[in-house]
Image 1 (cartoon, helix red, strand yellow):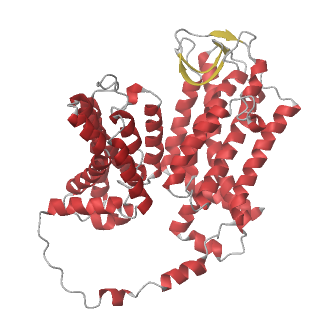
Image 2 (cartoon, rainbow, N blue to C red):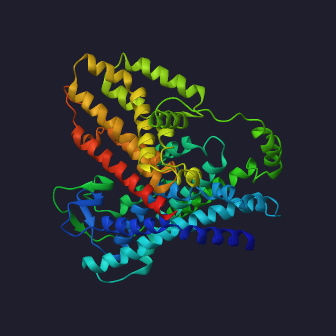
Image 3 (tube, rainbow, N blue to C red):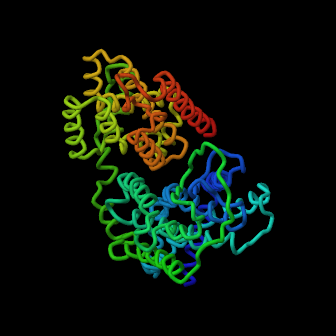
Length: 495
């Protein structure tokens, strides 16, 4: 037990030193403010048939706990999904492999570290909830038990599921790739929606059990950030139904999360040093690689063209054969189906390739000496634009044949925007999973008819884009590139 706790605490301390953790704490405060809006606000996160509870400790704790259960289960997954990979990068894994530490203990320690990280953010929201209760002024009577009960019985089990899922994805060969990052978006959506049902296994996220504590007039129950036409009516909420069935369901969800976290012990190799050493011995010695190489000959063509060609090769390198086969099938479909829907499909296919933009930190020591970082960054962005143009060519051809100029303008703006977003997020965070998560959610909202976010013209009505104007999307793309360039220049100046 001491080894487990020591591993969890050490890992947690390392995580809290990162800037991303501070950003998440600040966002947790913002989420608390959204969950407990001013009394005359036009948005809510919990709508009980046109009513909301008075801002007592119990109700403020409920809405902030539900907000943390929804938001932190999504964003928190990507924040903590790096525990095992970090041990591989830093070499700590090889030290642990040589120690008597058993694999279940290692997994339990990483699970506890994930849960401590997510739980500390939920704790920040709990403190924010108390402050907001006093600021809103509807009730100044502080009930610590009523405030914390929703966090213990609603938020904590869901955060445990998230901590376990992040560990499962990291230790499963197929799920540890970018595919797993995208898959989690859909898993989270299904869980957030289906978990509110009364028939959800083990009570879901615990929302259905709250129906009996709401007013009799509350025939509908909405959870999520929602706009309302007028401030809601108020009622005094009685608190969580802490009966045996409700508590047992929450405990069962937590125990299931622990079981999921320990499940990879059946296949996780725990940093098999012998296998890695054998692979390393199979590589040729550096002398045999470089011995007798002829002098490098001058390469014809412009430096800009060679740089762009190199960036394109780097971007698509390693793409398996089935990716190219799928891209070819989508291209054939794009010649027959309506351009808008097809464009939405073909521009989700290269998401794992786009997510590489801006994340090549391992080459930083070499690229720091490059005399023109702007040219290199432009070439990287251009490679992403070429990938977008290539995969989205069939819809563009059909729009060109139909003289659909608004559609072509939206297509061009989208082709500029997607790689600019990937480049900016990759440069600022250094990891591909940020773009994978953000873009998948953005794409999901677009295909669900959120026209205000239609950056590619997929929801065009009668040939005209229903979303933001193409010049605005292109301007945002340029601004994103500017953010990436500013970050690169700042990093370049520090070296």
